[in-house]
Image (tube, rainbow, N blue to C red):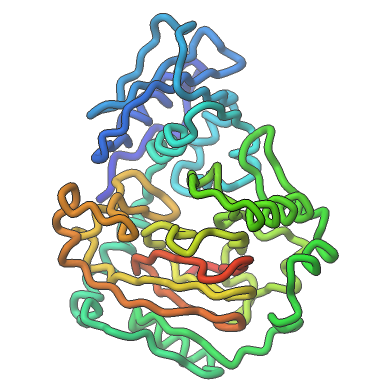
Length: 373
């Protein structure tokens, strides 16, 4: 489901701020009845700030700006303009985006709000529609296992992608091999590389992140918020210094968009990546620990309650790890297949497959590449 493209440029900053408020309203959904009040401040124009109130709809309020709010978001005007200019490809994990914004208070509300101001391109919506039709025609909903390919040729991989069949590749021999990697070695090799940026005030090098990771393993906690409170990099850009050791194992580097790092420690019952789908074919290489992936064919979109506002990937409201069938009744009929990915193995997921990922071991590390075609 596509929703209207927003205006991509404004004559004045004030018009851009007003446009941002309208963008949030247009992309807002609230099937879970979340309530709260967010104050959004533009530092260059403090008098143009506004409140966002969560209810059945999103309400923008511009009166009594001094009252207390549950969440504070400070966002520069340049970032607001960039959101419009790049709405189809905007990635909140990008340090040049998230690194300009300040968050405080209830971060769940900030996370929910960020999902309202992105929009899918016609290309992305078309890819999902095409995948749904193909999966229905080929009966992918009835698949019960994921095929394993041992040292396949690139031709074999292309055939699987053409058929939109997920496959696991085994027998790979990366250099250095996966067994040689550990947290301490990552710090030794890439200690100064920035691996995670959470806000204008929070960025971590590999050394910083591994220290936090070890502290979490010694004193784990349950409360996690995607994008803010989770000892996991959540697909942050792979530092350039690491690309030589964790490059793509098939095709050429130029055939992929910039790689992402998935590293950290998350309890086994909490997904490292919640249920979503991508418009490009994903290559996920497992480096440390094991991961489990639960996959749903694209023709089951109506059963999984995908969000209407999305761009680079489409999350779902339905949460298989804590299913609420009263709120999402059609999800009862959804069928998934599961596969465990071991160190040194690579899963290839053609565009459109919904998937949810769990870390079965900690620490855990994967690197992903999305194929451009």
